[in-house]
Image 1 (cartoon, rainbow, N blue to C red):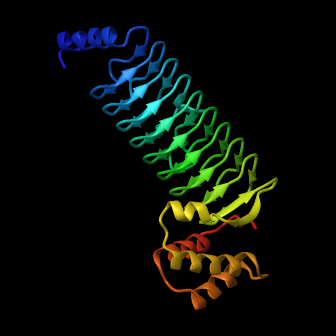
Image 2 (cartoon, one colour):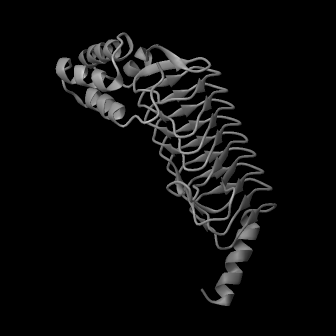
Length: 265
C-alpha cells in the first residue's frame, strides 16, 4: 500500500468510527459497527456484520468472525505477558457487558478459541487457552480458569467457578454458584461446593433432540458410573459390555478415557 492509499485508509477509518481508536492496520469487515470510545489494535481482524458496543477493548492477535455482538465494556485479547499468542472467536456469538477473554499463553497451546453461536453473559471471565465449542451458554459472573474445555451445548449457570484444566462435557449443566474442581461428564448436572452430580440433564437431551432409545442408554451409563462403587476404568469396561453402541455413548466413553483430574461424583 503506497503512502497516499494508506493515508486515505486512515482518514476513512477515523471518519467512520468517530470517538474510537481503530488502528489503521486492523482488518475490519463489511457492515461492521463499532461504538464510541472503543479500541481496536493493529493485529485484530473483525468479520462482516459484527456489532461492537461502546468502551470495548480488542487487542493482541485476535480474530473475530461474522455476525457477532459484543457489548459495552468487554475486553478481548489481553494477555498477562506480551507473547505471540492468539484469540479466535467464531461466528454468531453474543458477548455481553464487561466480559473479559484472555488470549492464549505460551504455557499452554497458545490459543484461546471460541466456536459459534455461544452466549457469554455479563461479567464472565475466560482465562488463557480456554477452548469453547459451540451452542454454549455461560451465565453472569462465571469464571473459567486456564485451559478449561467446554463441549457443545453445555450450560453453566451464573456465578460459577471452573478450575483450570477442567473439562465440561457435551450437554452438561452446571448449577448456579458451583465450584467445579474436576471434569464434568457429558449429559449430566452438577452443582454445589465442591460440585457434585445431581442427575441427568434430561431437558438438555430433549432440546438437543437426542432420541428416546439413546436417552435410555445414557440413563444406564449414568447408573453404572454414579450409582455403583466402580472405578472409572471398571465403569468404562462395564459400559462397553452392557450398553448399545451409538455416537452419544461412544462420546461418553471417549470423554471418560481421557479423564486426568477425576470427575465430579
